[in-house]
Structure formats: C-alpha cells, structure tokens
View 1 (cartoon, rainbow, N blue to C red):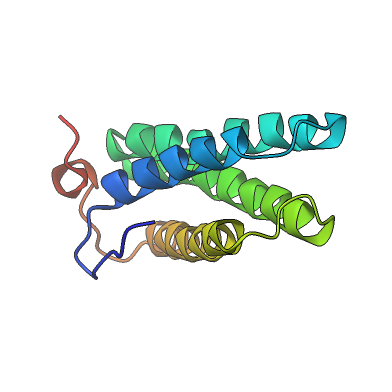
View 2: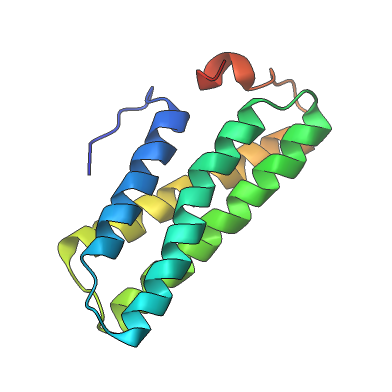
Length: 133
C-alpha cells in the first residue's frame, strides 16, 4: 500500500484501495469460504472507488449526498468483509490488516464528507477537486 499525504487525491486513493483489494483476493486460500468472502470483498471494495467517481460528477448537492451515501455503505461493507477475513483466520496477513486500516480511514473521510454536505454548510461541488473530467 502507498503512503498518502493530506493532499492526496481521493479518487486515486480509492482506486489504489480497489486495486489492493483485488490483489488481496488473488492471494486468499482456495477454500469455499475464502472464495465467497473474496467475491464479496471485490464487489464492495471496488465499488467504493467506482461510486466515489460517480459522486464527483454530481450535478447538485442532493445528488452528491445520495451518491456519497452509497460510497459510505460500500466502504462500511468492505470493513465488515475485511474484519471477517481477519477474525475467521482466513487472512491475518499484515497486508489484510493494513487494508482494514485504510478501509476505516476511507469510511471516516467519506462519512465526514456526507455530514458536511448534509449540514448545508458552504461546499463546492466535488467535480472540480476530484480530478474527474
């Protein structure tokens, strides 16, 4: 995993997270339990990045709030699957623990963004700062 500074573009950070999730899934054991969890975590972990990109293209505050809500749900689900992988003993590698830490950080960031947008405080639409064209 890469070290991200405070100005790191969240679109790229979420994409890197998705790629790390894909790499993790390829390293899971070939058991039926690991395959089920691997499919789930690929779905939710990659969805965080895809849905954040969509949120960045929101045309209004209401649309952004709805889309960032989906990002928060997917990030929280990814935290759950990572916790299951670790707590079940399927994957207790340092990389899995690191991904759990990153998933929790992303969840906190996206949750805060949703709260800010819902509060009605002044915010610019994210498209300008997301690097998505």
